[in-house]
Image 1 (tube, rainbow, N blue to C red):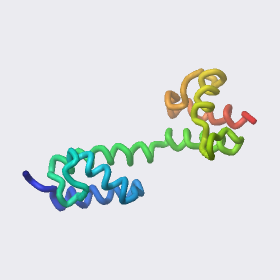
Image 2 (spheres, one colour):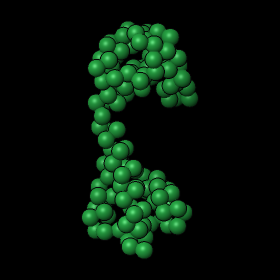
Image 3 (cartoon, helix red, strand yellow):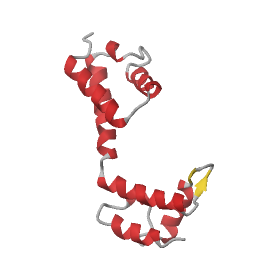
Length: 127
């Protein structure tokens, strides 16, 4: 069993910091990727660490995706106009509206980067 390398450790902790993960979330991820063997990144094998790094890198890429930032504008506007449930955006209400009234009648996550500006403009007209 080969433990993680120094480079993997650096990359892993950089990704964790970029995502702003709480310690309990970090421990849960390590527990999951080590097949319930450990909660400490020091004890991850090289292969386990690499799998976790790949997962976290995808999360960072999704976070920085311009399309996701535009989708967040829609959810922010939904919150502003009171489409909430228990203090959070009522995502089901947003999705139902999208399917029924949005210009392409599809889920917000199915809109492309090119289509999202028009969708944002349309959604901002909802009161």
